[in-house]
Amino acid sequence: MVNAFDGGKLFLLIYKIKEYMTKKILIVEDEKDIARLIQYNLDKAGFSCETAASGEDALALLGRKGFDLVILDVMLPGVDGLEVCRRMRKDTDLTDVPVIMLTAKGEEVDRIVGLELGAEDYMVKPFSPRELVLRVKAILRRRIAVEDVDVLKAGALILDKGRHRVTVDGVEVVLTAMEFKLLALLMGRPGRIQSREVLLNDVWGIDADVYTRTVDTHVRRLRLKLKAVGDLVETVIGAGYRFRQDHEN
Ligand code: CA
Image (cartoon, rainbow, N blue to C red):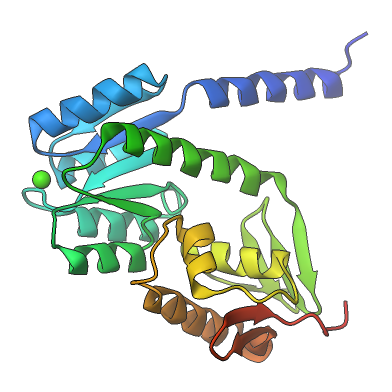
């Protein structure tokens, strides 16, 4: 006999499988040839894609449909890619949707600002569409892995991954998507030194030692928000950061 609970679980399972199969991706790019090339490669890899040629169109589509990932060109007519990313991060429905920024060669500022705004990754034009597909897959895989974990606790500090919620002594601390990921990662590896490079790679998902200042900025903000328990995130001079292990649980 299938009771309601099993039925619910079965439904969830089917829903999960469906979720794996048809990940929806929004491609925001005003250069038609590039948009077409990206779409062709993502379609071939089994993703379901839609395209937008301006920031306004992108925001309108994002507001209506549940996308799993956004590929976002920085240089767009009207509302540019950085502004789209900024607005996404402020919107509770969109704050968790990963963004891969497309930047023009030499636009280092765009890359840094993009990462500061919470983009997961970036690619510099011209890029290999195959590499882009690999990065899309890696980000979506990481998302699924993160979803599997539960509740992390360190004294008064509790991080609930399922509910995407952080509390200190029961009081909610509002974090950005990146601050949340950073804290989850540090808490998940207590007592272990995490270099800036490792954090960049595992939180933002890129291999780069050039933009390590991004990590420092986020750690600083995170500590400020955590107030009294901010010192749980320790600086290890010359090495990186470490989540303190000597707290009472
Ligand atoms: Ca463009």
